[in-house]
Image 1 (tube, protein in one colour):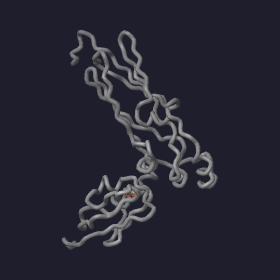
Image 2 (cartoon, helix red, strand yellow; image 1 turned 90 degrees about the horizontal axis):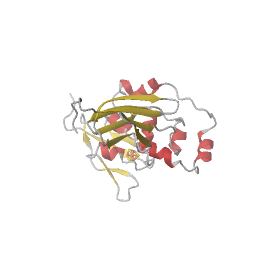
Image 3 (cartoon, rainbow, N blue to C red; image 1 turned 30 degrees about the vertical axis):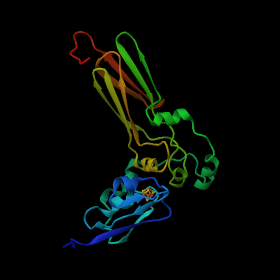
Image 4 (tube, helix red, strand yellow; image 1 turned 120 degrees about the vertical axis):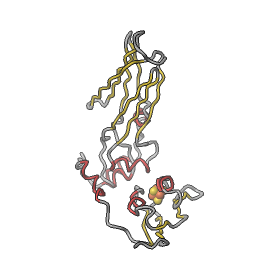
Length: 232
Ligand code: SF4
């Protein structure tokens, strides 16, 4: 039987990039230091409260280790990333060379806006609205992108639309776990976005279509008619 008073302790190494992930997910154990340069451990954790793998794996740069207590066997889904298929790199040169070439390149502002759901247009005709979102196409450059062998082409986002009269919500989520790990380390790279738009005319229905080649998500909204029972 597990000792109810047994504690586990963690340590944060110099590899920490101050991404806040451990502090956000396990605030009873980690806080950011005053300079916001490195997470620090403030408490031990009673055995059984968390699975140590969840704590260790929250860190995108493997800076957290268990120094008191025992790691249980790895969870079965630990290799789930591999289920997402192999990453195909167009350039097989060593990552250090590719990073050296990329690190001073300035990022396209429009590409950054796509990651926040701000790269969109709204058009209309008599009966419909047409909302077009340009979805992210490129994984932003960062040392870890190259070190971890991540692709340049952004994996697809999963989108979800909800409509309530004049209000339409567009939620998009990056699902690839390997690239999502980069979100905690790179500025201006959330793992998804939520856009809420208010239309002038209430709508009764919508349909969505995604063009994977151009990465355009088109949402077509039917303007409500007098016969539709739709909130104004
Ligand atoms: S998750 Fe890792 S890199 Fe991020 S703050 Fe915690 S220790 Fe540092």
